[in-house]
Length: 409
Ligand code: MG
Image (cartoon, rainbow, N blue to C red):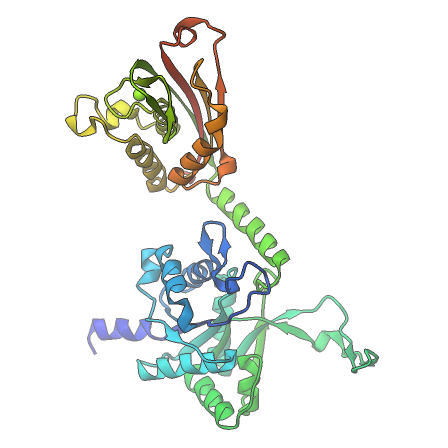
């Protein structure tokens, strides 16, 4: 066997089978919950990233609903390139979770079957390398395994009249999570048997039990919870925000200032919004004074010069250019540094036109351009009480502050 073949074997040793074919929208918003957004990406996208980070050598097979092809492809656009390399083409699921898992396993059986398969819920994005490591070890040792969490509440068994019929001893009870980990032939065989016998179970561990295989429970983690209710989504968002901020501790601010003079015309551009006026602003580009100030503030926050250094006025390419090109470039530079823009605050200084009626459109336009929530974009306006060049209505000035967060150096 040559080196390449050896590597291929190592890569195929472990495969994640991610079950994402469910229609569950109990958490609201209509979309199946695995495709609902959690911050800037869908739940499934978070889950796939976490799985990849936990075992980068593992292949990832997702089982999806045929109606969700576009939603699934959208999830992939947010994945790290290294994770994308591990993704197998998706398989379509069936009417039940059990059938979806079986169809996924059958698809893997047709390729090069893995030694170990980790079957995971699409709506558990907080899986980590500790759980995955325990799962792989348990599958190697016991053939069939699942993560179990110790219960803190006493559990009662009740009858249909809600009368307690039993109080099982808590020390022998576990709440079971995913990834459930199996030697591939064990779980494939168990699923085939369950299907042949028309038996329906709620998790894969039960299917292994049905097939007569002992199932070991390894230590789960309460942080690895499944997103089901709106409250679960709120809790998940808090965790993701906290992670984002912890990963980007280097907070910087930058300032920008720009002025453009009026010349004959009938409209001005401010923050990407066209506003009718009795003059236009003179300039090499579209003279969007507000966008120029914001662009300079962002470039200032990353200490990468100013707008003139990136887009020299002497360069004919930028004559009449839309200023959103400049702003997008500055945002791109922040992204390339691994950072985010946390907040923009800007002030437009002029006697006219009136900014108030256009303020919200300007905020929304800028927020969309910078891929920010609109509550992270503040636009204010003031006159100078008739004083100075703005007071004499000779032009418009704009001031901006940008707050950005970068990874630690
Ligand atoms: Mg300018």
